[in-house]
Image (cartoon, rainbow, N blue to C red):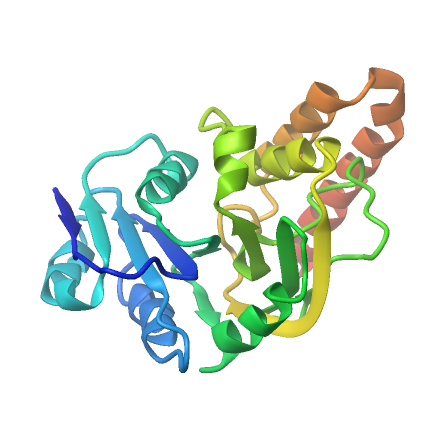
Length: 250
């Protein structure tokens, strides 16, 4: 099923939310978008055929959704690609169902920075509920790990046309792969001093499962010579073991 509300003006920002059986967590994520002031973002929801009542709830909110797709998909990155294909905004932001925009002026304030920058990617701060915060470093090392968190990252939509979509064969690290592709294509990443999103813990890329670290090494070896990757591969294993130990003690 596809629902698309007609709008005359091209939106500045498209917010894409991919979900499947999110429960009531989805409510807070979408409410944070609806509350935005001074910027009317295009809101796109791609639902993977939820069976927990989320699809029916979204149906009741159809007037507040610019595009709504519901049906089986090939995973979260396939859903995100579908969202990009529907997007019309100059910029694209991806929110998860555990994520909320960190205030009702976030998009408006971010637009002020975007207008002053020629960057292809604008990155603010992502703050997790357990106290962790992540920002883009001024000197990026793409070998180390994924260097931006998508919940706080705005991409020019044209980058997906020029550099390809997310690789849906990667279950956890397709955004890392996409970011490295952009970096190697000399796309500029611009840090901005704004908190964009507050994020729940335990998401698909935050659980600390070995699969995520394994995909991190796969992406690394796709883009860099093996000898440059080995040290960082070892550090990925150390990070995995450390997280596993910490969770075992919790």
